[in-house]
Length: 527
Image (tube, rainbow, N blue to C red; front, top):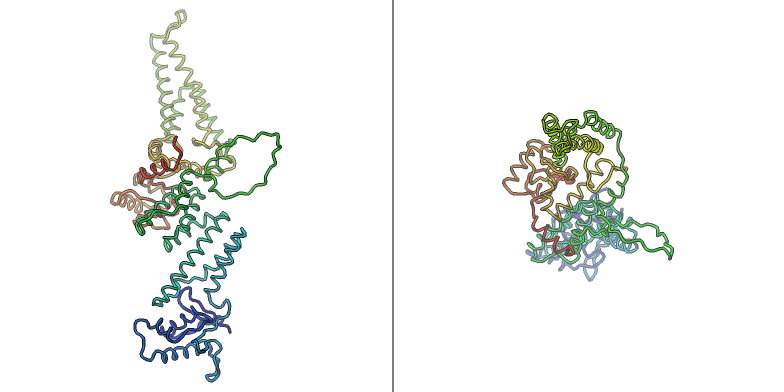
């Protein structure tokens, strides 16, 4: 059977499903050198210099001949000792290992990558991605694992570089296919292996941004810049910096490309005015949420709240509005309830005093105050209570549900809140973004600022136990604010399988706020 060789990992050779015993370490090194020069002659001197570079044997040619004989027995077990080898031959130029096309995994890998580049050039991204996935599955670990020496180290670096380039091409193809959601997690792992490849970091930024994780995309850029500065003393390349600036501006052209049929416009029709597009992560939610869609439960709650206030002549409007404001942790609605209560109390005090004129007395200013105290709680307070009960939550920038599930609406609000946190951290503090333990009027979709909330609130996070919350609080107090999800894991505050599922809920306020503001000031147009 045809022998197949693999060097993208530990060196192996197999015939069918049977792995071949290649003998001792030096004999395996000889085979590896012959595979790196497959179908080309390698002299005995070159073999000695490569395999025994530091301590060559006295009778090097005889030792090489011994290992060649061992390889012939292993690769051609059925060959007669007196018949010539057809796999490993010797001529005047040296030893030659005959490797059929496709029998060496590096050849298969290189062919698949070349084919994928042709598919990308033809915009056939699906075929390119499929071929690259198959090529990358050939890797079983470090290439030529266990083999030392200058020649093998050089070849190992070349193969690793080819693998990094294949990942870059795969990222390009899968981003074009809109597979950013699954690609992001893989790129985080791959970048740990190839931290200096800026194309991979560009792909990670774009994958995060297209998932609506703009803050994490900006954090990934800062990590890339810190690494390049610390390791090489240089700034990121122009492409990475340009992508960072476009993410800061929420450039709509960064979103996935959606081809639509062109609609011809009559020459006489004036062109419609250009309307600025919202960021791609928020636009689908806003576009789908234009028509209000109230549930039966919300209508029943509105009738109960408004009816109770109306039947009691607005006397209990303050209690209803105030209670709903407290439930929502809304300072505005709670204060409105206090105002209605103050007017109601003033009305009762005036009605029981001698300041109000009788039937035959002229209308005075205190009578006006009494009328206002009657009208405002009765009509304004009743309407306020009904509307407050009708709308489940306040939704800045998004009107109604319109076919969106609750989680989709919450994610839209989270994205708005993250943009405010990124662009204007000072305003984010005033709005209470990520602080569900504080009163606020801005609905941030349930985000939690892990650097600000108390320990008791950490326990409410999915999968976080009381012990984990305690560890988070202790590590935050000892090591300072967390810089992101990776920092949570690196500092041992949470295990990866606990931390990364919280990516949609956590924000990291109070970290690099000044740096963010400086980046925004330089990236956005002045004024």
